Length: 133
Image (cartoon, helix red, strand yellow):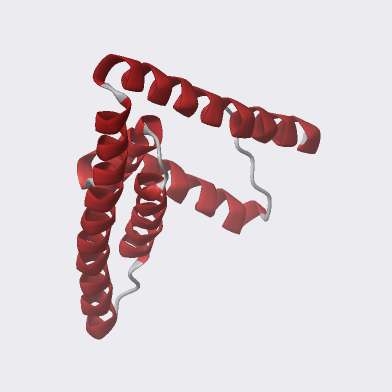
């Protein structure tokens, strides 16, 4: 089982950069290298700003929950996903930008948050974690 997970991760770490590079080359071919670089750079800056704004909003909600004496579990999940979104948005590439934007906005983040919550619950109850792809 462990070998299957490692193999899947290895394939993903090889395929994703190849796909990103292919998309960058194709977009560069269609709109020009300079415009492509400007898009990638602009998306990184805009993504960092959006991730910071959303992260600060989540931190504020965490503080409100703690002051009210409740556990901020939902906000912690949101915070983790916004952190991942920020990393994806800063990473050069259009596919990672799309994934980062999907994680950044609450409506599209919700299904991933449900999956994460289920995985954490499974880990708490069984002390094992199974991820099927």
